[in-house]
Image (cartoon, rainbow, N blue to C red; front, top):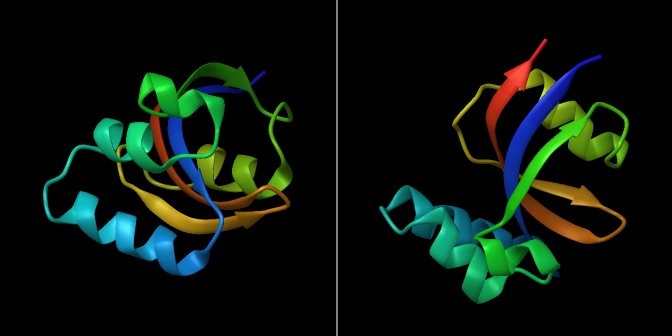
Length: 93
């Protein structure tokens, strides 16, 4: 079974998500941005979700985590919870 480790942040608007992605691109730390802005409880850990299996997260999330490039900030990814920035840090195929 596929597993991955990832971090994310969750905000309410696509606009804010894009602004935060730009801050990260400009050198701000993902962890610091997640702690300050993320609406998810994982924000307190810098967005760290730990390791999870394929199918444990919503489909839009899984699609990015299990298919897109590692160690790159992806998003905005829209789910029923809001808009996410996602970074897959490890994957076991």
